[in-house]
Length: 146
Image 1 (cartoon, one colour):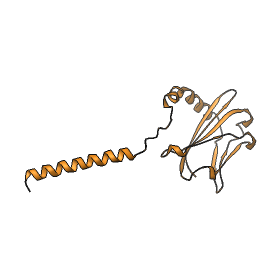
Image 2: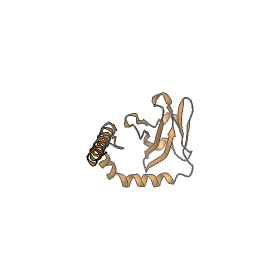
Image 3: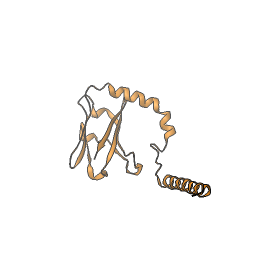
Image 4: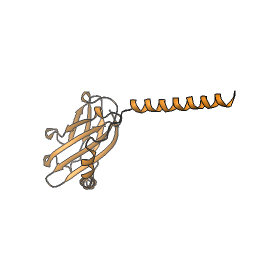
C-alpha cells in the first residue's frame, strides 16, 4: 500500500466519523429542563429561600410507591389547610413530554395520592413546592421509580 491510498482511507474514515456524529446529533432530543429557563433563573433567589424554609421542617416527607398509587406523606407539622397553592412535579429527565404536574388535594389531608395509571412507568425526579400565607416551600425528593 502506498501513501496515496493511506491518505484517501484516512480522509474517508474521518468524513464517515463526522457524518455519523452529525446524524447522531440531529436524532438526539434536546429538551430543555425548563421552557422558560430565563424567568426561572430570575426566580432563583425565591427558590433558595423556599428550600431554606423547607429545611426548617423537622420531620421528613415520606414517599412510597405501591401497585396503585404514588403516596406522598407530609408530617403533621405541615398544616395542609394553610396551603394556598401546592404542586407535585414529576420530572422525567430523558423525555420532557412525560413530565407531569399535579395540584395538592386539600381533601386528602397529609397524604397526597397519585394514581399510577396517570403516569408512565420509569424514573422521575419528584419536586414538591407549596405556598402558605406566610412562606414558600420547595423540596426535591430525588429520583423515584414508578
